[in-house]
Image (cartoon, rainbow, N blue to C red; front, side):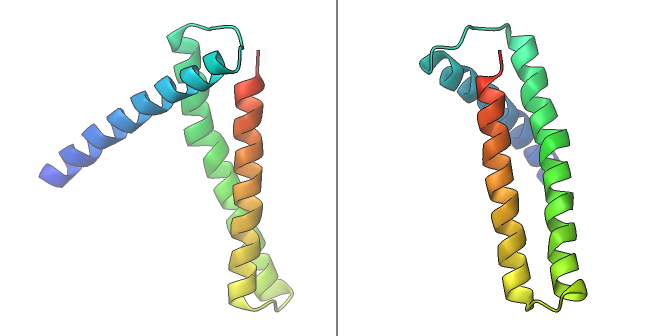
Length: 99
């Protein structure tokens, strides 16, 4: 019971911290300021839609490499994680540059 409440509080704190850091990065790079609601929506969309999609595609790539092309499991996991990390950083950079 307490672990569920702790996870919920930590998740809310993490989301609020993500929004504040996102606003700080945008302000530091000289982009125009937006209201908190729009930034919260963009961070939520990134966290819950974009990252889940990237994770699913990376997992599919790992499985395709391992079972379809007989690439060793370690290599397929490494390639899938690398593709997912690069794609995630690229999407986050696009999010910061958005007007």
